[in-house]
Image (cartoon, rainbow, N blue to C red; front, side, top):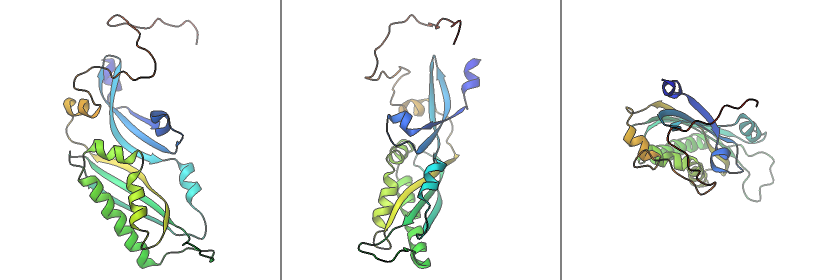
Length: 206
């Protein structure tokens, strides 16, 4: 069956394309799990920042702090999350460098792990994705670490899905905000009435 060829396929899409947004450095991986007619229902499979963005953040005279942690959502997804942050100059600082001490780095790293664990373990996958889109977790970490050492450019750099719960069509529908198998019609564009099983005509030239 043609639909079986689609299932399990992973699509990597820029968040800007999904949200009609200007911020294009965040990429989401979506896996096709169910095919219904001409619609493919996808599930979250991972998140990443573009290499361009990562390279632009790394600069001299500052400390880069990274952390990673394995966390489980309430609905059984096991995620490995990577966090990145950079120190910045304190207010009215004249000195060129802003290096953090080893003890401060360790404290910040512990704080990163604690906040990520708290945010993910208390929510389901849908809520976690909703937090990843505006990167509210990164903002929380930045705010919490101000007392230790001022940070900037704090992001969840990468998310990997290590384990998934058993496939459940009902849960997938719920995630897509659908009770049944109806297609969600957005405000943009207009609905065109077509007979059931309509196939577009084959184009002679592209």
